[in-house]
Image (cartoon, rainbow, N blue to C red; front, side, top):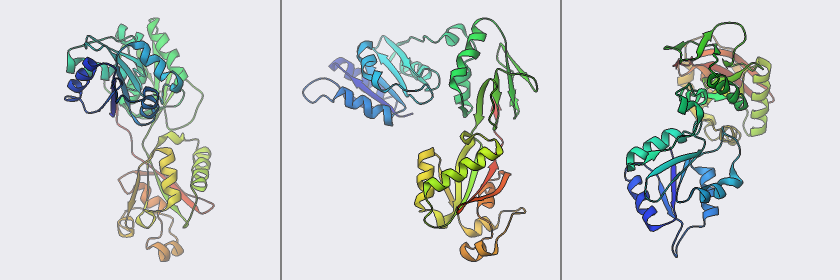
Length: 326
């Protein structure tokens, strides 16, 4: 987690340095002749950091972050700690952003008391958004989190349905079901039912003509996932042949979607066992008869969706079955 800390007094800065001797991060001083610009620091930190810690008054933090708060699935964790290190308070993204967990770590590091205000934590109930982050699940409709948490807080039970096995004992108040309506649905596929959580477990094998645009790759990916009813959030990585390692369109597509880009040699792809849709032209051009399908399963994945071609882009999807546990 990339932590950025700003302090507004000398004593607060000393506390920040003590904290950063235990936890990795960066300290900025918001006081004195060489003080940083608080608004500029906040804007940059919101874009680049996972968590912001304001050592000073809570009001300073609230006014600083107000212009930048967007969505609970995107906002970094924001915490406040007084200059004496008595209390540390998560004020934004306590669950999905990890603010509550970070508050406990900071409190342990400097001897502070964590002040946790989220209702499920105070009641000792299942926090579905925290669990989803821990399991690497994308939250498709975060507005539905409230419905799940509200039922638990009222003492009602919630139903969870999953396309994949979930090991371990279900938390108190959660019933795992295989059919019927559910409050929480874990699936690769789009749907309208309940809180939808998507495992990030698909490898996108990709081939393309030289000079392809990122827009063309995105359009092909959108068409493929739409046709199959698969959430685009299920993509975990993109993999191709090493001849495409510097293909600008593929690189931009990966950057825009925040996906790692991996490549492999023609020999490595050719050695992948299995039956694939081979092309003599592709074999003569790059040294292996199929790039996208072989790339999709190179890491031991199972071929879920075979070759799909559109406007100079070929795509395939390989599945790495997620390991989910309570």
